[in-house]
Length: 213
Image 1 (cartoon, rainbow, N blue to C red):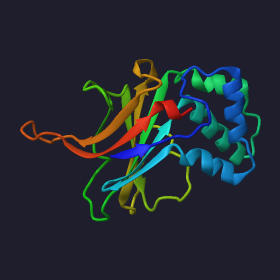
Image 2: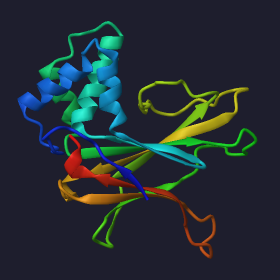
Image 3: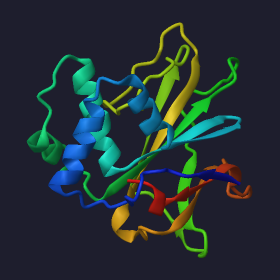
Image 4: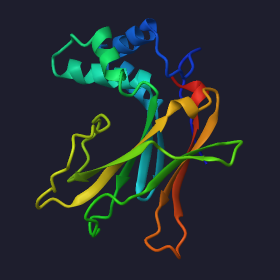
């Protein structure tokens, strides 16, 4: 079992961000100190390394603002502020995203990212929570080191002569059904091609919501 512990001082996960929360997220995203960014994001990733799953990342509403502010700053635009952050969160305020990063064998025959299933189950329960939706983004060619989580932009154009060496599966979960202090198992499964075959578990990671922002 892998454990993802997100250290955030005395703060805890809360989907309802107030103006002070938003300002703090903006300050992190617009910081010019590189190691502050590395330290912040490192806490939201759990390394798995169980083929084909490389790692798993959590994107909370708070981190979503940090990522957006970083992207704007990297493009030379530091005008991203409270109003823009609120507009961005309007469509995903009660949503937590789980990014599953994958690598495939270079000789794979996939025509797209496999339809892996991602679920959350509270550690002391048996009820499985399904995502609101799932998006799959193929990766053609080598992975870019240090790149932020990919953003869905619509239909993906095939990589031409480049093989599909990996991809990202993004599962969107409703936070209103999650216990802020709960501990959850994130499970990645391979969906059986035939009804006679059961789904097989590829990997799992434990997430402590009480320790993240």
